[in-house]
Picture 1 (cartoon, rainbow, N blue to C red):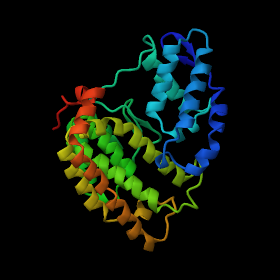
Picture 2: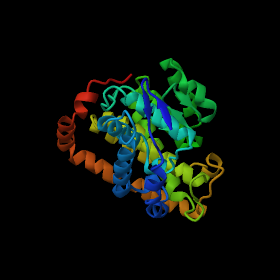
Picture 3: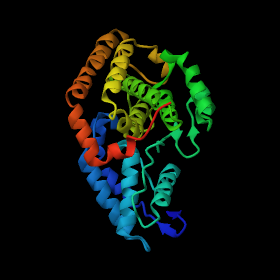
Length: 317
């Protein structure tokens, strides 16, 4: 596969099928990126990709390492597993990573004010390209007022919104400066994604390409990509975040008509929904407790790893 990155640069994906096959058994057990992170797969993906990449003429270790780390940062395990040399989406991701890394192979700089996310088929930060139904054009607008107005319209249908719609709205609110509101939308989206996950019929989730499986994978992808920015901002204001988490927890105890929102997936018996959702809501207490008792440690860690320096200057409309 050839990627035009300003200079001619080739990346071979022939090794990817071998890399991914080795993790298929673990993957089948886990079923979804949302269920966990198996470091063995990531380690194998990293070493094998870089080995294959550096074998190409004109590449460097630094350039290949940058491309690999970019792919890992922007994709869940499930998305990496589905990569294929013949897949146009894979080619698009590789091309974007290669373009970003072509200058000396350095890790592309992270813009703390704008979320760089790609979750097919719902969102691509390039454009942005958005496919979440009737709200897509409004959310894609470059006018912050249009984006905010669209989210006000969405609020009128709050209980009927799917978690991909909520995640995309959170990203766009963040990008156009409504960052405190974005945190609320993001945590609501995260709750509803987990709600769907615990209420899906485990015997009917299916595999790659099936609606239930793809829905779970999308939840993991949004959390891992958008969460990098929104959590980096939100944890700089722990008291405000606690208030948001409590609000989301309270609102989450009400279950919407999931079958109407996600018509193509199978859920467990409705009689089991309240108990399962109650446990999910109760579980948010642990996050509140952590935020309340670890404020100093969180601040120290953010200062040490550079997160505070990157995100502390950001404001919110």
